[in-house]
Structures are given as C-alpha cells and as structure tokens.
Amino acid sequence: MTTAFKMINSPTSVVDEMLRGLVHSSPDLCLVPDYRIVLHRDYNDLKQRQVTLLSGGGSGHEPAHAGYIGHGMLTGVICGDGDRLNFGLAIETAKAEGLNVDMVVIGDDLAIPDAKAGHRGLAGTVFVHKIAGAMAAQGFPLAKIAEQLQQLAIGTMGVAWNSCTLPASEVGHDRVVVMVNNLGSTTSMELQVIVHDVRQYCVAQQLVVERVAVGSFMTALDMSGFSLTLWKLSEEQATAQLGWLDTPVTAAAWPARLGRFTDDNVVNVHDVAPAKPSSASTLTITGELLKRAIYAATQSIIQAEADLTDWDTKVGDGDCGLTLAAGAKAIQHDLATYPLNIPSKTLLAVASSIANAIGGTSGGTSYCTYKYRYAGADATKRIAAHDAFGRTSYVGEEAVKNIPDPGAMAVAIWIQALVPHLQTE
Image (cartoon, rainbow, N blue to C red):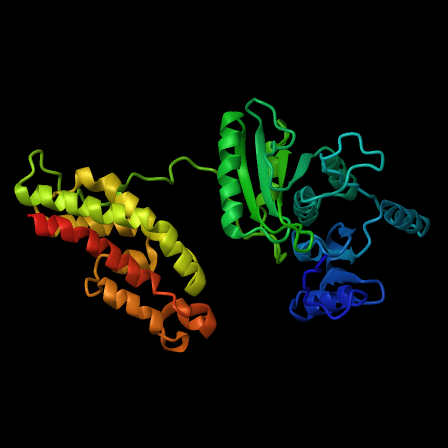
C-alpha cells in the first residue's frame, strides 16, 4: 500500500516543529516546549482578570485546539495529550496544591451510542470553547461556567461519502446552531454543497437554524470527509447562548462572523436585469433559418462532448466537452425565448445564455470566434506544447503529440453543422 507523501521531517518531531512554527507566526502566542503547552502571551494578565481556560487533545486535528487561543476563547492548550486520565490526574494534583479547578469532559460523538470507553470530543468541542471563553471574558465564576457547559446539548456525527442523518435532530421548532466541519481534504466547493443539503434537511425537519459555521474547525490530517455538529439551544437561555457565541474573539481559527440561513438572498434575475426582447409569435424566413441553424450547431456540440472531453483531458484540464455541452444545452433551453426575427439581438441572447451557463474563457469567446475550420483545427495537432497557449503549454511534449486543440475543434464542429442549412437556403 502506497503511503501518501507528507511535508514533515520526522514523525517523532513533527508536533514540536509544528508548535514552534505556530508560535513564530502568531505574535499573541507563546510556547512551553518541554510540555508542549501553547499559551496566550498575556496569560499572566488574563489569570488575574478571569477564569483561566485550558483545553487539550491529540495533535493532527489542527486548528484544534491551539487555533482557539485568544481573548474571548482559550487561555492555553496542552498539545498531543487528550487522555481523560491524564487530565483527571492533573486536576487532582492542582486541587492538592490549593488551586480552584474544575474539568468539563466533552463527548459530542454520536457514532457509537453505547460506547464503553465513553464518547469522544469532536468538532462540537469548538462550540464549548467559544461559550466558555465568552463567559470567562464577561467575568463569570468557574462554577457557573462549568455548570453552563455541562448543560450544552451538542452532538456530532462524522461522515464519509455515504448518505447521513443530521445528528440529534427531531421534527419540531428547536432553535439550533449547525457546524459543517472539514475533516481534512474536503474542498470548499464540497463543503458548500453539504451546507446546501443541510439547509434543506433542517427546513424539512422544521429546525430553526440560528447560526451556521462552515470550515476547518477540527481536522484529522488529510481525512476525506466531514462532520456535522448540531447544538440545540436551551429554551431558557438561547438568547444568552447566542450572545456568547457572537462575542468577538482574537483566536485565529474562529471565524470573524458566523453565517445564517436566509431565504431572501436568492433574487430573481428579472429584478436586477433589464427585460430581454421578447420572442416573436410568428417567425420570418430568416428567423426560422436562424432557429434551425442554432439548434443544429448546439446539437453537434452535445454529440461531440465525449471527444472534446477526451482531447482536453490530454492537453488541458478535462472540462472542455462538459463545459461546451452545458452551454449548448442552455442555448437549446432558451431558444424559444430568442428574438429570432432580429439576428443581431439573437446573437446577443445566445452569448448571454452561454455566459450564464458556463462563464469562464469558453463563455466569453465561444461565439465570438469564426476563423476556424476543420483544416485549421486539425492543424493544431502539430503545435508543440511550448508554443501553445493556455493549459496545453503546461503539459509535456509527448502528452500532446497528435492531439488537436479542443477549443478549435469545438468551433469547427459547430460551424460545420451550420453549413447544410446555409447551403439549403
């Protein structure tokens, strides 16, 4: 089995090197290297003014937990040690020395309902950090903070790439906070797709989502997947809990602003754009010819999708066929709305359909270029990679040998599709 490459010098030193890199790049932090403890640089001042908040856990889950050190969140973090026994022993030692301390064990993992070893602390831990930090900054005593944290109803479910159920959700009108957490290698695009699905699920379950946090809050190195955390707000203290959640902090890993699900941020295009020329009820000869020609050209692109994609996979980024086919389908969808009796305005409408459907370079140039024919397009096979433009110039010479430029071929294909209609008329 091939091991994925990691940018580390040695597994035995990676945590220490990572912590030094963190504090060197974070002016508000300092490191106690002998114990792998990261502290807020103002920890002495903070402990005089408020309850000191320490957290900890295994490394490899960054930005947890050191990323949440800052005014309004944690005072410090013990890195690389998340064992409850060790924390418990530390608590007993501190009490024996006369310190007023308490421990809150976080177990928001819902994957194994009756886990004999107890529930793990997952991404829901970050909500606990936030509430504890806000309360401490506002001067609440230790006992009150611990009491509030013990009452938080938070559940997290880690998800691979199969269907999932939002954790701890019931049909009703509960007020909740949702976190969509990247476990390591999930892209921003994928996270936002997940957010869309989560919103639809919450609507179906009649859950009132007060806040939504999206990003990398607690990872597992490069794990592919995500976790969903649902925090059910207290009926009696929801306002206070949201206030603590919204309190500004200086912790680097906490977002400056949490999102909210809204229904009024999707607007109708007709509300922001001028009305397009309406289609004619009766087409002239020119209008009918233009309609048939446009349909033939777009159909030729749709049928050539596989070839275009194959060529572009070898010399580009592999999306040419899919992209141009999407534009062609958009044109066919809008064709009945075009002012076909006015060719100039029809071409503008075609360009608009393409730009709206595919954007990018293809959207801006596909219907503005008329110089190619099959001979010219086929001649692009002989262009060396280092003489080419666009992504082909990044590819090795052997990889592009005898492969035509997909964009040139696409233009030749749809122009060729027009010829029979023009010759007939």
